[in-house]
Image: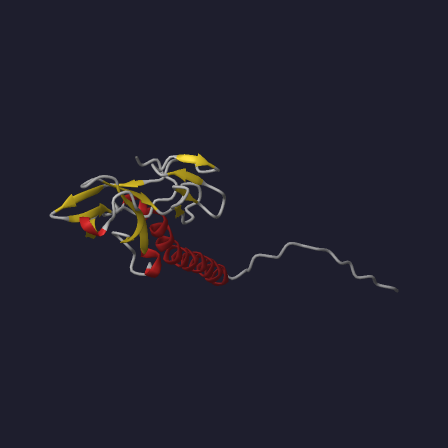
Length: 181
């Protein structure tokens, strides 16, 4: 007679030996535990990197940028600044600048060199007496208020003081879009 084999898709049968079952269960639990440990080892530093800046207060230092007589009355010049609390790997990005103008004999005003739209570096156009952002067309008046373009806020102003003939600027973390006054 012609015998036909029946092909059925049956579920795997549980092993008869309890030792096999406990070994399989042990390895399943071991794999899950090792996966959890690896996930924690990789995940905790990442979470720390994301959350740590929320709890770290940025230092604010007074940086001497020159003597009072180094700056001409009514002239706006760029002065170098450094981030007061750079990370060890910040490198050149920790270096910044400010636009400084001598208004009176002892009065100075300083602005961030970063546009409040997207943080692009702005330029001082002396003939027009305007700050201009070449990236997106942001324009600021000489007092830092927005004249045209997309910037949502005026330029960030730094505190400036004269102490023993030195002009000092209170540096802050590099401002981009902020509501600091």
